[in-house]
Image (cartoon, rainbow, N blue to C red; front, top):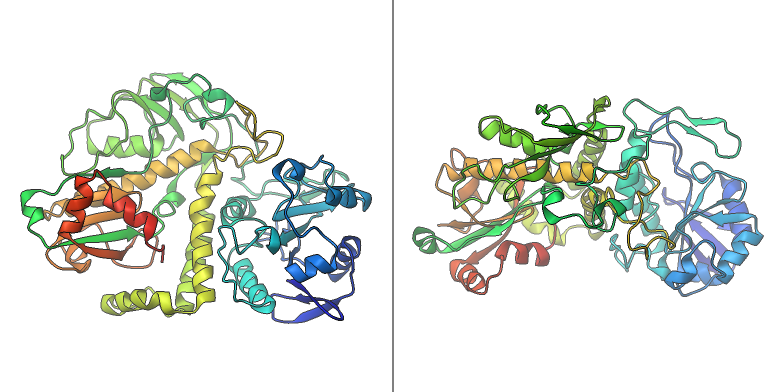
Length: 521
């Protein structure tokens, strides 16, 4: 963190120490940064270091003579004529393909962006306070540096919004081999299971806007989506005085460590034999399977539709083996690509919760009391907990994110981004796995005559006799457990039954309303 004092710039480091910096312009700042040797070590010896991060406060921005206002979108392009880009080029440096922005990467013109970068975060342009980080505005430079240092030690160096960090963390933990683009020397040896190839998605997997999705019929796209469903209460449920909402902790993270991923393209196969270890997409009619009308449908499709392997495996476990008509399958060797990523996020989250006084071994009453008091706990650690959640959940979205480069965002149909880790098939598999896990738990809980009233992703509503979530979790067959691990549940809110009835009369999914309005923790 750099801020300005009358005598010059002061750098606040993650360990709470400070260093003076005599730089008065960007050139001197970059040279000073290189001399200091800042930056965290790579997360694996076979990978690359992330490069140092400089966070510029408004006072530091003014001292360095940099623009106080963020460039307009057209001016952010790395080839635009913005004065700051002229200055960077004159220094022998350049930005990456994303150009200027609240978060940006600079590297020498003769260097390798993956190896020789210095990263800038400019708070006046929107970094940290006005993006998904949601950092408290009352933290001073030293406190913010320590908080970012804690995130770095638990996760990785923050070089963008949390979702971008989470996406990059996937390849940090399974680094691919990398040769320096200038010297051609081996800069990273890589590990088994890394994603190394840029591959097109199968036509059914391509997200909207991708060139393979042009003129595609709705039924020809992947049907695996989160559950969004509600129903009116039955006569018996309407007599229960309460509606209790629970949330599943990191619904999409839970179970993602089991998903098999192949480094290679998909191949079209007619009438394939289903293999639960084969990643890909399968065309079959899973909507005809009977299910209880008071439960959401297990699959988001009607008629023949494309489903990923986790969805098809859930169908195969519930009924006689369905027969796929067609498949886009990946035959390359597979690994549980997200397993180390899952483990790092899980441990990071547990570490922050422990600092907030919440541990996995607490008795349920003590845990519920601690969760109730969480909004009044240390704001810095709560912000860090929120950042870890955003790192996990938003990283999945980045798997199928449209291109962010200024020269591609306006295209009517854009090509596959030049990133091996751009994998919309993996995003669909994560959605399918989460949906299957949640539906399985809803089915178990229904054996005790507790059926969901509404579901919106990770939020579920039940009609209850008491205002306590334990009425659901204490049932003999309940699929839900109160806890803090991914996949466990926590209470969100309790409302009177008439509140739900009024929303139902308006056609509103009450679970979605709570998901949108209640804090994540």
